[in-house]
Image 1 (cartoon, rainbow, N blue to C red):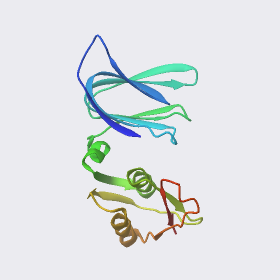
Image 2: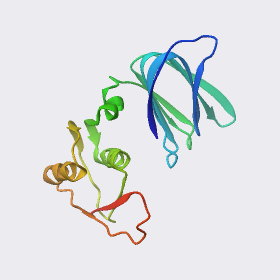
Image 3: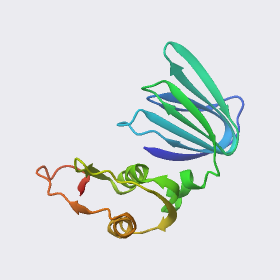
Image 4: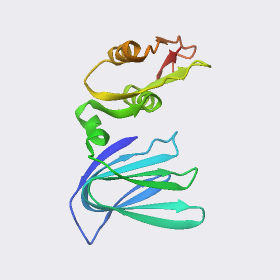
Length: 175
């Protein structure tokens, strides 16, 4: 899942957030954590304050300290870490029911939409959504957003009838 934390400083009792693939030690701060169970990636964005991100690289324990406007991307499968500068705007937009795209590749856009709308996209074999997108969507229905992509890059989509109606997520085919 994804969560936003605002933690008051208390040096006698540091606040810790644990994910399957890393641990964050909070030293009084505001930050966003994105760590979904089905994904081996963890993204932590620091808005203000200071945090430490602990992770494994093989058998070795490592720690990266983040300062405001930094984002760490950790791929647990590969044991790789990227430290990036960010405005924090796109990473925390979800709190205000917004999706902010800033030159975001089509595959990443679909991944964002899957999380925000609890859907699963199935891309037909031989189809490769291409392009990158910049824009902001606020409280918009998924169908409307997909129609924008249909107009801009010719992305065609349709709902797939689900055999197992007990599934939580809706299935959408990109063709």
